[in-house]
Length: 216
Image (cartoon, rainbow, N blue to C red; front, side, top):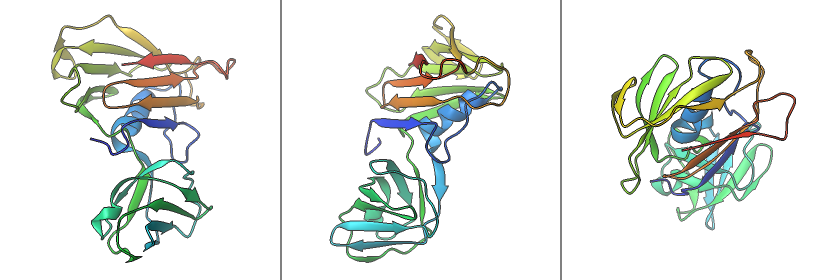
């Protein structure tokens, strides 16, 4: 389970995947938001003093105050996992920690944290099936067919045995990506926890403040 269960992610964040009128772009966004995260960086150092960890990158990192990052590879282990950023400069950031004072060792890595309580159970060419790993969730499957350009189809299943086979299918829904079949980026915003997610796609180039809201 994620340390910070509710995540808000959006296309303006550094390293965020691009949503566009191309096959597979929606799956790239869902993979990043639900499972993998993005903006993976290798800090120069992490130093702890008086309950505060300072992460120095030596270059522009692109994270913002209050973002949730996931730290890996650090010793002491208390530095690893999800951390909420308390302050930033262009090349460094801080977060609160219970780790002892001193410099961290290890192969340091940070990334914008994904929601973290979902899995990709099946996949194929421009197809993916997602499900919550929360044992108190319904356990239903979300199948995304992202083979076309301007939209993807979303179908809920009660059970699935591969990316194309399942039982108890819902009505097919159309998740719009773009009004044009090209690689021009479209804004998106993701909000979700271990049981519910929203993905707002600003799919039309002429309506920049209006989005299509998709949910599962």
